[in-house]
Amino acid sequence: MPISHDAHTVKQFDIQLANLRNLVLEMGGLVEDQIQRAIQALDDEDLSEAREVVSRDQIINGLQVKADEDCISIIALRQPVGVDLRMIMSLSKAVTDLERIGDEAEKIARMTVKTYDGVSSPPSAKLLRDIAPMAKQATSMLHGCLDALARLDVERAVQVARGDDELDQEFQSALRRLITYMMEDPRTIGHAINVIFIIKALERIGDHSKNIAEYIIYLVKGKDVRHVKTEDLSSAASEPE
Amino acid sequence: MSTTPLEINTPLDGATTSSRASGNPLSSTQITDYDHRQTVGKITVDNPKMTCRGVNVYYGAKQALKNVSLDIGANEVIAFIGPSGCGKSTFLRCLNRMNDTIPGCRVAGEIRLDQEDIYDRSLDVVQLRARVGMVFQKPNPFPKSIYENVAYGPRIHGMVQNKAELDALVIASLERAGLLKEVEKRLEEPGTGLSGGQQQRLCIARAIAVNPEVILMDEPCSALDPIATAKIEELIDELRENYTIVIVTHSMQQAARVSQRTAYFHLGDLIEIGETDQIFTNPRHKLTEDYITGRFG
Image (cartoon, each protein chain N blue to C red):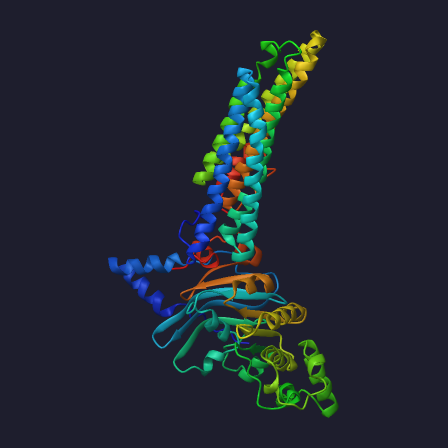
């Protein structure tokens, strides 16, 4: 069944739902920006920008609290059912994942500060080579799921969820390469561990984006596709309920 | 037991078949409309108490219920929801032939209680209504004592041999209706002197005193405050052990709280039926979704 876009008889309910969704999308935009800035700061070895990213995480935390309060208030006052209930539950869960993505951005920024501390020599380019492609994939997944949320686009959400396997594979091969470098030259271990934290953060961003994509499928289709194999995702999401 | 041939949709079907043959474009819209309303969801249950097939109800020329088919499971609470005029109360009244009393009302189709056709000519309607009891929107105790309100049914149905048996039955019924503690010291006082919620539980006690198998409830809580409503809802849940309950309600929260299955009616059609949980989280028909989420008209 296509999701109903008709207005509620009680207009205030529509306004509250729209406000909540806008708040979540705003939070998503901010989180996306945080990731990009964190990656840019790492690339530019810009420590003040990295510290800026760390401090801005507070804003995201604040939005999370506000969004959760709004969810609870709508549930208490409106007793939502059907698609409204699915909307609120999905948004509420998406908020948790967005906040965690924000934390991952903060982690990357902290690692940047640690890596370029001015004491040890900076890491060699080959240690950092996996970060850029993984960051690209992770930000594209995040962007995709926010896009899917804004448009309630199931196809886009399926696409995002599928992208996670690719990111996981990139993470595994990056890890293997880093282990090799560390074995070849134990002096790289310090930097390599920081890089591992960074690529792990990027891999987690993929996981959270996939979660959000799954909530969107649930919201639109009423079908829980968590723990469905990636190859079955498309058919599971398109089946009639 | 006779097997009356189904009289499903005779007027409409007749019209559509002939118009189909003549290819009248105007009537083909009717066909689409008719074909369009197919109930979504599973209408059958494993252990039906009542089975309804192709039920049509007409008030004079106006069709109030269109080809409704569904099962009512034994020991389940099933809720009928829908906007005013959707036919849910009409359908409820078909289940114990209360519509017989309405002039100009005609019921076609088949309704069976334990396989037995309740519209069979040989069936005793008074007996039927003892088996399928009813509780109304407004509590309507008789202007008699609390005791007499409950004793009336068993007495006229000759269910008891003596006063002691009758006493026991009255007490048991009040107990089951969750009212005994509040009234045991004033059984001789008039039933109309009780509070609204107590009166409604008295009516439930009166309905269960004749040992029915099915209880029909037509908005039993709409005249009650939230506490009295909660008591009735708790009672409905307890009664489910021994009875099958069909409840019509305008409160969707109430339907969600008390029923296991929910049926949604719209303009005389049964639009959707399913597990209450599914209906309220993931309804399959847009009309159901619009109604339960408050996006109606």
